Length: 165
Image (cartoon, rainbow, N blue to C red):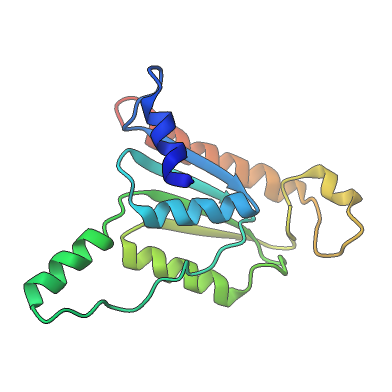
């Protein structure tokens, strides 16, 4: 589905098919991490806001009998050039430190240029003011983190998607 969405965007006449960025919140944030590991041409950056991330099922090294075949296969698999910003609530119960480590480890294996910002006292959904109405303690709006994460995310998009970058 993610690849199909990118292909549709790239087919539109008003879209620069070599300058595509993506933003996702919650499970959409997980889609950003999947997109980064897909290494799709033209997708240059992504921002995940309180994304429910994990390692994406990345397995350890593939085995081949021939060393050259092994290296070539790994270069094909692990060749992302995407920049990713993970904006995480440090108090988000849906994303453990182990999940963040698995995600960032997989990013490193795929060559993703990633940065993680964990916002103190921010829970899941910290960018959404309506989360203050959610009776679950797992959720909550955190204005400072919402503003800072939006500024960081839009800065990345401007840097990566502006003409001449």
